[in-house]
Image 1: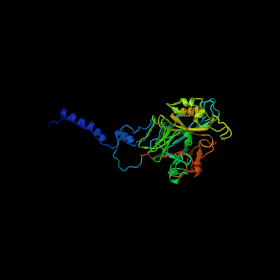
Image 2 (image 1 turned 180 degrees about the vertical axis):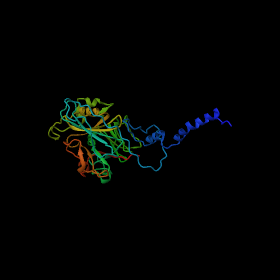
Image 3 (image 1 turned 90 degrees about the horizontal axis):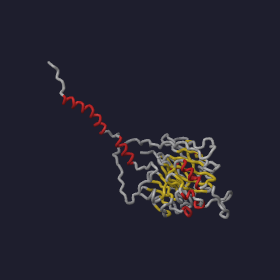
Image 4 (image 1 turned 30 degrees about the vertical axis):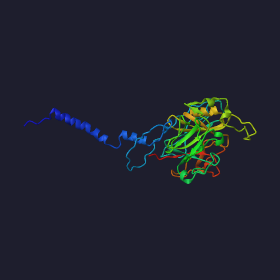
Length: 368
């Protein structure tokens, strides 16, 4: 008997089944790229330098996913910062080269530091880069700035928060000089000012910097706003105010050797500032002998697209990281280090019950 050969129609059907079955199975999988993209959107975390959308007058739809019992995912970090080109010549050894510091998050370094001399300067300022995908921000408030307490989060940092603390840094001026407002813990302590430079923290711990009312604005998930003066950096460049010869507009400074109010201040002074990069990293810088323009130039060189001045004068600027000997160890002055060893304040500042000024902490986040 002659063997029965498949017809053309039968061969076509077999081809469809062989080639189509993997696609059908892939479409039914819970690990498709489409679902992964939806999960990233649903997290609500802003990881770019773009401001969070305002809820005023707009309707925002967020993707949702059906979750099952799963182990927490390791958060995806930002790309590590690239070395900075020194702004003066000859450059000091290591100038612009980043060094990882502080407690790792899920085995990944979340903070990098370097030092750089600003244009026209002779003394280096410290620069810190923080991965906002690995770190969550929180505003701590004090009895002097902003005043009007008591607050849930105030100095000293408590053990529950010290267990995940990676870094902390100073806030802004006393509110009487800040020319801006302060919002935290569900209430407006000082009314927010349109156009003021603002550090904004959201409910998921993400943080950004921008001009209030244009770059950033109030939304349901805003949990803290700390305003201080006007923008120092905008569009990746020093603002016109930063380049203005009217340096007194950036705050009253101490004299060369005293902070007596009867002695005229000087332009080149201890100053600090913060800003965000295009990919959402948070950058802090502080150093001695800085003009407002030099402060802005340091931020720009570190990739900041929107930035602001924080506190000034010798007694207030401070940035510290903490690296306990064990992964779940408590941050403490004994395992802390300062970005600028010459600063008056230190890693112990934020654990001092007498510290009465506001500050920002950056703590490890486990992701979702």
